[in-house]
Image 1 (cartoon, rainbow, N blue to C red):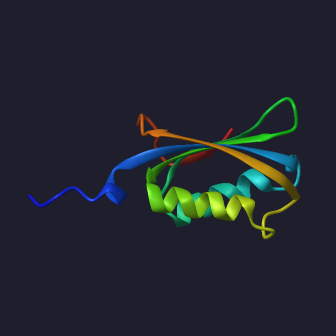
Image 2 (image 1 turned 90 degrees about the vertical axis):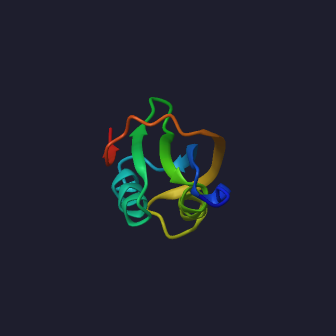
Image 3 (image 1 turned 180 degrees about the vertical axis):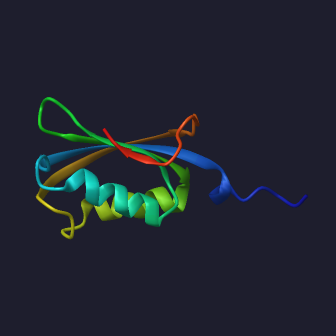
Amino acid sequence: MGPVNEQDIPVRLAAWVHGQVQGVGFRWWTRSRALELGLVGFARNLPDGRVEVVAEGPRDHCARLLTALRSQTSPGRVDRVVESWAAAKGGFTGFAER
């Protein structure tokens, strides 16, 4: 076996999306982007109006999802995205809207 490519080690991205992101199809849109990137996890509405996104997969794919979340192409209006990175914990199958 050759050296392990750091990009291949799964990571967990947690992102909290602030703005007008509930009731506008944002979770569905996020799920579509995540599935295109081969990520697993979920997107859910929080009581305070934010959407929480948790995604696991290769770091560069998670980074591409984060870029998409911050882009102006999502439904609604994103004011800011707070991110947190950690080692993948596993346990997800597919990408769910919660």
